[in-house]
Image (tube, rainbow, N blue to C red):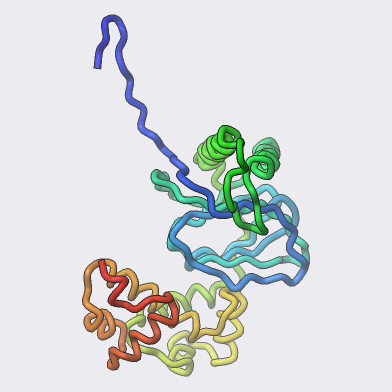
Length: 276
């Protein structure tokens, strides 16, 4: 659009953070392990000291100080202390209406970027009420400061996510390779209603080795993780408009009532309520 001598130049927004869920700075003790989770918003983990093991979907990494990973919405992720260290991290999670597509989501940050994130966290402590890991609310009278924190996070991410910061983290041990293979088999056979013995055989592992590997990288047993993947797939099918019966059958449940009970236990609501 032209206005006299001036010409408008539209700028597409590459990243837009709409809300914060968590913002924390903490040290994990040696031997710490978090069993992992999946949620529908993004999360950033930046290691500021030590080494942290990270599960991200089907990938397993060891991040050193100055490295960062972005977990996209819907990605299973877990974290643990690695290499005998007590890693220090800054972690924040957020909902974004615009999030760039990235060929890689692991980055090495220069020291000034890590310092900037530490400064942003200190500003967040003043602008928000933080309860544990959670961002509870904006402090009264600090709306402008809270908005500035979000804008600084956007600028931090835009700088950090540039291609020149892409990293090659330490990756992977034999057990991590086994975990990746196990997840591939789980996804390939997600509609087969596997038991532990069958899954172990398909992965060329013993049942104890299967259980030990999955528990190390996901924090739960093999069948619990397999069933969680099935419920996650069920939620996707239901959201796409599949009927409860169609969804149950596609995931190997011959008993629709049993499927409904499993889904409600996993999600907290009946599958009929999850339909798109």
